[in-house]
Length: 71
Figure: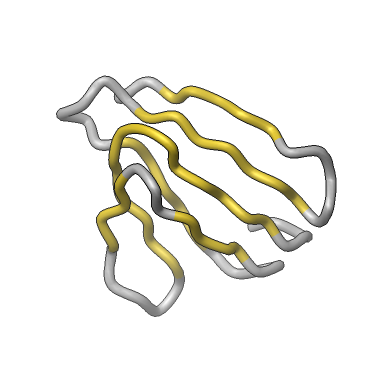
């Protein structure tokens, strides 16, 4: 769980997003989503792909980019 609002943008690849009290969602390149403080969540790249590229901004901090390999 996060203590701050977080915006995530998936720029390449695909994966899965799960939030408390919702069904799992497939997320693909171009998807953006918001995590609200203290809401349980998890997300990960699809194991059948090479991973994904994502950027995020947490409560107005500097925009960050990362690549996450598939497991």
